[in-house]
Length: 66
Figure 1 (cartoon, one colour):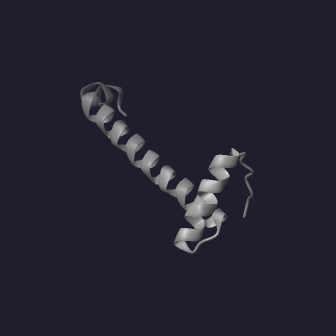
Figure 2 (tube, rainbow, N blue to C red; figure 1 turned 90 degrees about the vertical axis):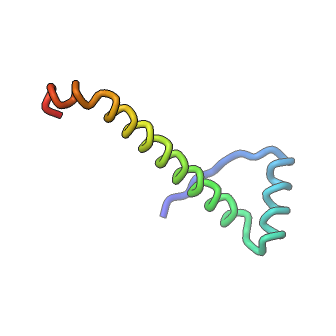
């Protein structure tokens, strides 16, 4: 497993600690879930955009043999 270091302001660190405490998790678990949620959302957004572009340009892609 890889490690990643991020810098948080004092306010962000306190908010993260409060959320972790309120949910019974560690701050690392809360941060990891936030990263995973963001990656899922971006994957869906980019996939939807790729599909939209493929549909929009289908005739051209077909002519190019793609």
